[in-house]
Length: 367
Image (cartoon, rainbow, N blue to C red; front, top):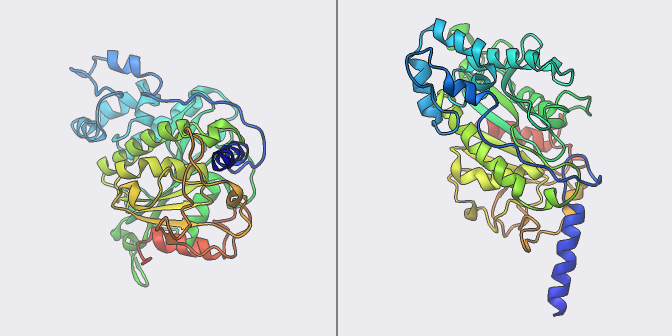
């Protein structure tokens, strides 16, 4: 009975502590945004192309890719203009079409919170204004990259706050920029025809990084952050997103999963073709061991000495808590050095051991 009482106290503490990058604020319950993108009904009803368009709710990314491959440029451009929210979020659609569709969708939203996403030169790979909003942005040339990394953030991230002022190297975009810089990818990247650099061609060395805020994250600290409901919904979206990358010929990605984002990655890992899954500042991955993730990817874990996530009890009881500490020896993940990381959001700070290790993992050079 005494042991059971301790377990209940620990579980209650997990509810009070588990959270994301925002720290110790109280949380509000969130409704997960799921299903096909806005505008899907009008898309399904469009018969201007001589047959049914691929159903965003049921068509696989590979089927979407084959559909667009059969269209000429005029038809593709017409679909972008008529259905920007669908094309912009349709995994398997050609990347340039998605970038243009999302530029139009952001402009059409007429919301000042999103206006900066339509700035020239930005590569917005997904934009969904429902709820708090979701967004994914590409840093680099995803069409020609030799390596792809995906940042999966934790609590308090959404499209509305995506471009908010933050401390450098934090937040999805800041982490993505820092990682891409750390990989040493040349500024003039792209195809082999663009030339070569010392140590190999530009294409051989290029890394594209995607900041993926593609799920409904918890807000602050509360039950949403302590249970797996939002993570399960996010895992489904992440798995489909990575299938979409595969459908357009992108390299198998490396997933960098911060805080509650590591819970998402833990649930999604077996359904993705990721080469590596990196959990940083993790409260747990809903698995007792790395093997229990049932993934062929290499699993890595990092936690800095001053990261408050260490105070989160690694328990699971009645759905509360996220299980074993991924940095523990028993979990069996490869350890990422993080002795010089400060706080919960400092893993991508330039000059840290963790960022150097992340860059090597992203380039396929870590062993």
